[in-house]
Image 1 (tube, rainbow, N blue to C red):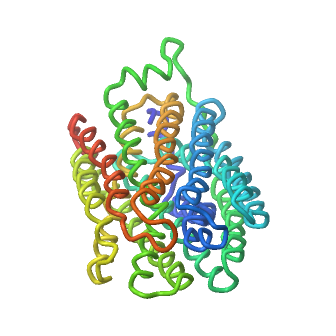
Image 2 (cartoon, rainbow, N blue to C red; image 1 turned 90 degrees about the vertical axis):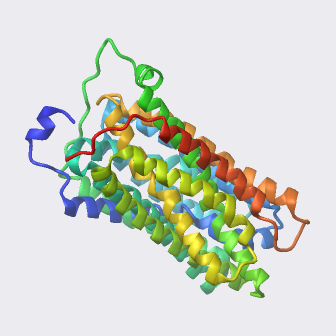
Image 3 (cartoon, rainbow, N blue to C red; image 1 turned 180 degrees about the vertical axis):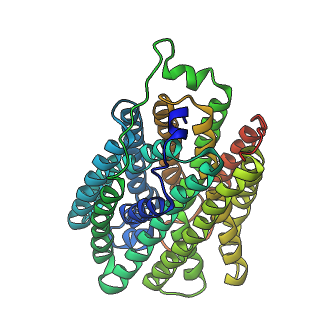
Length: 414
């Protein structure tokens, strides 16, 4: 943040932070639409686990490209402007997906289009929050931003589950696709009083210098990439994993799918508390120790949870809650740390490459997870072997731990 930014009255008040986060909740209502419906889509569309994971991968690839484009454009055209463009596009493409996705090909193409529209309500807002929030509260503000993502995921899962209960997966698709329209209207309204800022850039420095020669930024980007592999792979498949657990306990397919979606939605809400609290904790304790602890705990739980598919709910649900908490908890801390490590005017470009690498890895994770499920289970029926697939995700957590350990220890902001 520049000295001039420190002198002016803060535009990012608590009420505006909350308003922007509520807008993001509605805008993200299509993020988990397919993940929530995977068990039914596999049956009704006659899909393998790999094919079902490929639909999620289509969205995530589009999202990774979108994050790169919108983040790069933020340095040149301003965060506020890019967020508004993305919100309008997200509302339009979500509606198209909800109304027109009726088979694997249409879902694959339209869900990828939704992903291409969504990036501007993430990375540009990270830049905006980094500009407008004071240093001693930046982690807390970023926690609100990341936490709203999880609440949006939970809302998405809940909307799809409700739609399935009313009229099957078609109604689930339609219901979740209407909510981003509300989000776009709210985001535009709450951004109106905030200035669209474009930082000056030095003629002697390129964005690649911040990415390749800035050791801290490089470690944080590598850690984020590994973190995204674990987190996005987990979020894509945890509804199906929980549905499988319920099915193995005797629940019918539709009932197990709905229960898995609702419980996964609760996991996202619980994970949101991690974003809210861990961002604030990192303001007080420092970024590095929080990152190390959360990444290590996430890796351990990835190595464990997949083997618990047949465990009773009294054991499985607490482990799943802890898994959601630690996997998401480092997201706001990673974003805050990279915003502090990178020079203003270049943060958008670094976030662009970070997003492309992170969500690129996250795009591969769901289809790789599905391939492991197909390889370790008999065709058809409910998968019973989930351990190897989750262990594969845990490798990302282990790499993120190593990257966090290599960071310099900095004084916490006061």
